[in-house]
Image (cartoon, rainbow, N blue to C red; front, side, top):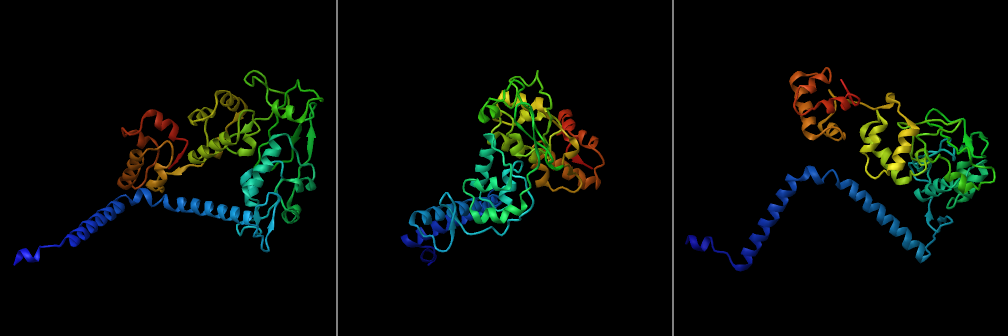
Length: 335
């Protein structure tokens, strides 16, 4: 009798095996949720962006213009995004992030930066209307907010921007041997001396690395968009630089570019954003490049045991924190 109860047909056995496999997979997914769930929204966002671009491309090919206007590139433009906020800006100093926040598409921001990298200068508001990809409607809407600061010229004829706000760090470094007959493209290539470690041109102004954006960093010869983005991204992860030598920790910077950065930049440590050790979560602590998971765990456990961590010397008592760790973490931890 009991044999009849535990007997399963071939189809039933297959169903049982399939159900068992599904249960195991679900359980594994629950165990590993901490690893793949946080990354899921970002992947979905990227997929949505790709699908949107594909839709625009298909509509462009099929000629489905409907009632929407197209820019000079043929890409569809249906007005300003809801997140756009028009504020005063200088097209000669604004970075790509600022242009996008004003409602411009990323490719238009890249066109502006490319124009500036080749020595282009916006001398009046109407010059901005010639940006490739910018529609007349966009320019008309942005024109009242364009603020072009006065420009002076040095002996070589290269522009020196003035009138920048506190959020901008002016930068000018010009080759004294450049003649007035030199073309604009040649002048842009000779902005920096060949050996910046030995020669500093007259009128040179240091760049402050903790406030320089990608557009300002790209004014250095040998520093392209990718290198500038890596510097800004690593600076954001750290909270700021306390030494120019920290640039050596960034992969992909060529030695000559690194030498220029180390020579032509200064550090304002008051701009560093510190982590409050007594309030930060485990995730926040371990996300810092100088803190490992085990070090972050020590901080959390010590905080539970003592309620408050008073200074970094309390962390130095644990083997997880070497003398070098304490020396560099003192710039980034607040108590």
